Length: 427
Image (cartoon, rainbow, N blue to C red; front, side, top):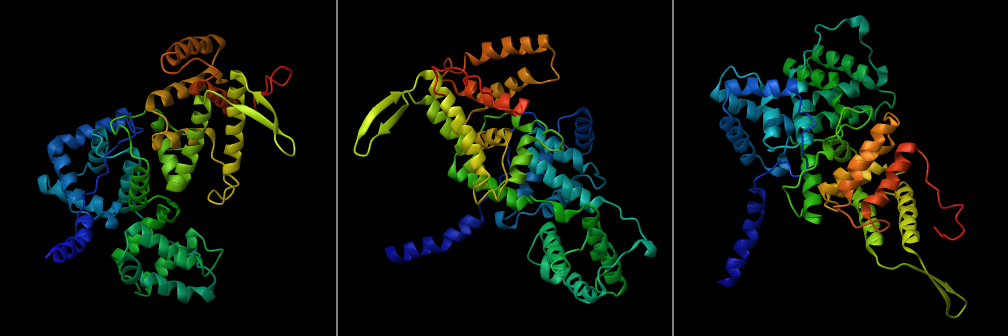
């Protein structure tokens, strides 16, 4: 009897696992990257058609009926729009509904971007009919095989995958036949496939919309995002899921994404963990009450040099620089060197540093900004140092003062070597 019950439990475990409700709730971000007057107006327009509770209820229903291994932004959008139009058949404020869900922390900015990118694909309007003189097929020898690949889009690629994944897989298979294959070549191929009746008009239209939006270039799908964040939360459970940071939603210089969006789209979960652990090691060294250098002869130790507090502080910074450079040599990074801001965002993502410290470190950057006047910098100094004193122990042991030096280097583009002329200091 006991064996039968045990066997029954084993059999139902996969069923229970697959029935687990998907949650996309925001647990890291403070003020949204998308918080603007124009987007707030879109929220207002959406709420004029559908009530707040109806949007929240519709989204909850969609997620409840979605299996985590079948997460797809295009399906989420389609099902959510269907639910909302069941309330108001003329509802056309989908973007406002997405921004509203973000304002209620039902989703974070990364999910907002993924869902809106998918929405932009299906709502884009291709210029039809195409001008034959502007269509450029790839090498003729490869065209028949490429057309055959396109003809199997629905039966082979889309049958078991989300639309974005299916499109990228199809694109990659075509590109394998011709290394010089470009996006404009696909434009001509899609027209050719439709004219030869290898695909119907609806398939042609959806593929052309994907091509126009360069869907093959996207690096983060909803499914990959969910797997990545779930992996991080399992390995590094958050101490407080209500702790949110505005720092992570600040815009990355010269990019149209936030710091956290950039982190999650650019790095794997393993890379994020490795980056966060660099900061974790720094903190451990700074918290250590003692550091020594041991000198040995061939048999035993002959001298122990105890480092002074400031020497320990500088040693920790030197080791941080070294480990940051070593990341690029790691096989998992393939020569890519994460910058200081990436490391800080990664450390916060896995709970190595709290939001309060992240905010203080972010404020320190203003001190050395070349766009600031002397009096602006002086004001920031007073405000920052007075608040830092309430969070960390006094330097040279402090975590934030150590990161401040790194911020100086990141901002000024050079290392600080103020101790080189001091013969009494080892570091």
